[in-house]
Amino acid sequence: MSVQQLFVNDTANSTIFPADQVCTIRDQFYCFVLNLFYMNEYKTTIKSMFKEIFENTAFNEAAIQKYFDQEYIQEVDGKKLNYAQFCKHVSLQKETIRTLSFDFQTIITEGNILFSNHVVCGTTKDGRSGKFRVIAEFHFKDQKIIYCNELTHMISGDEKDRDLGSRH
Image (cartoon, rainbow, N blue to C red; front, top):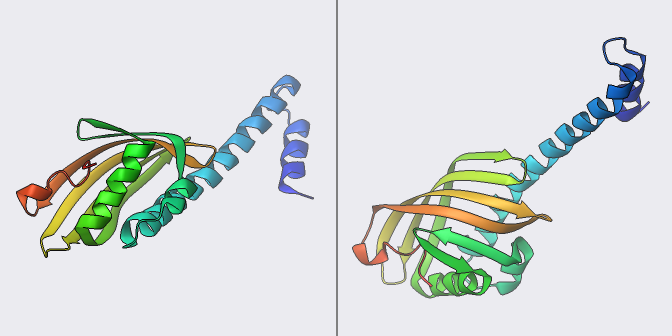
């Protein structure tokens, strides 16, 4: 007997739930299970995206297309970037930055939203090092990132690199 059959049989035979609420309870259960699945999926997606797009030294627009919706909007440090501007932002980072690494402090999901608090460490091609704290809220649509609201705070580094989180 499947979990679905057990759940339906259990609630259908229960005197706790009126018959007209069984469907609602079952639907809530499925939504709960589905949310658990997507919450873990979103965490995996975000970590994979940062590794594939930002830790990779080469610009790869196919990777951006894999993770980001064409209607993507990013609000970062008071600036608003659309999908094309975001691609330009990533491309400019590749021209400037030699290495990037990400240390995820907190990742929380609720529905189709993922919140991340992470620290980014990087080195530019001319040898400057920087460390940034990033607080970001990502929204997913059809398993792709469609929106990000991000605040980037430079912890240490050269003042001319302060806008690396939004430069485009």
